[in-house]
Amino acid sequence: MDKLIIEGGVPLRGAVRISGSKNAALPILFASILPDEPVTFLNVPNLRDIHTTVRLLNILGCETECSDGAAHTRPGALNPEAPYDLVKTMRASVLCLGPLLARLGKAKVALPGGCAIGARPVDLHIAALEKMGAKFELEGGYIYGTCRGLRGAHIHFDFPTVGGTENLLMAAVLAKGETVLENAAREPEVVDLAQFLVRCGADIEGQGTSVIRIRGVKELHGCTYPIMADRIEAGTFIAAAAITGGELLLKQCPVEGMDAVLTKFADMGIEMIQEGENLRVACEGQLQAVDVTTQPYPGFPTDLQAQTMALMCVALGTSTMKETIFENRFMHVQELTRLGADIRLSGNTAIVRGGVEFKGAPVMASDLRASASLVLAGLAADGVTEIQRIYHLDRGYERIEDKLRPLGARIVRVKE
Ligand code: EPZ
Image (cartoon, rainbow, N blue to C red; front, top):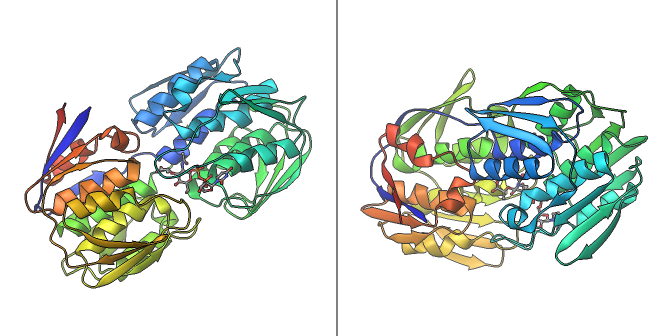
């Protein structure tokens, strides 16, 4: 397993290009099962989860190849089974459920199982698909779904589930009649999926709001579609500039989907100036404490919770971070503490005492975004930080050390 060695204390300076969004690319790649014709995707990030999805699509019979930031898919004879050995490595595999039921009328998908940040069931996906006429059995760790053609339904989600909204969007575009999704997720990545489907000929309105209407069409055609930029990677690099007291130009930064993040970061004293598609970030002064609560979009994204907590550690004053989306997303706290953080947990709230000077130490990555917070702390720390199990990081960040080193970071990847 690889590890990262970081010698901290260098203010980052220079320009970095924000990659395509992992959380838009994954559902959109699964949606390529739906059209009758080949599809080309641009701005596809080079990530472990993307490689896993490409492997899974080929197993499902959707011929897919991915290179140099583009992916090409060609529909073939579909196979309904998503095997456990792939699904267990990536929860998002459950997103093949909707497209398989829509195209094939059956699906056998290994239950994703929990992950480090929580149980993460798929009960909301199942209940909504049953309303559209699908029948499910759970057996031997697999979800067996069948239907004799999906029909439009009026669905209300108990929680604005991102994956649930995406699965239902993909199930509804070829269904008979109209489907209404109420309390739908409004994340920009959900909108990107809807825009891709519309470009293939789907009839969807309301994407980005809590009520999405989908009128089923007979078939979908191919297209070329550019994946949106990754707002979570962008937020991570803003935090990297701030925590090292440097100045970065983020190229192709998706500012429009980052209001809650940019507002909080500005409250902390981070200077951000939009320059066309780019965002210039600087942080001359001392960071200030803030209080943050994670919420479904357009609230503060849970995927930037860990990274923001690293910022809070070095800010002046005491901050609070309340996590309302996942029940166990504080795995980074114990590792940040090893680097000198002073954080007390009270239920789903972390009380972060600021003014800390991180000191380098060996730490362990536990999940994707927790790993990013450890990289940030290592970049600011006095001395050397060694981060083990960085396969977590590779799931969501394109060779982060190759992006950080040109900015002045002293960071190397070591094969263990
Ligand atoms: C997506 O996960 C993202 N993943 C997550 O990003 C992100 O944190 C999350 O949305 C919230 O924004 C991808 O897009 C691939 P949810 P998803 O369904 O779809 C509960 C990252 O770091 N829930 O909105 O799984 C669930 O347990 C990852 O890039 C149910 O109870 O998120 C969780 O507590 C991490 N039943 C909450 O809702 C269900 O049927 C949010 O889940 C579905 C969800």
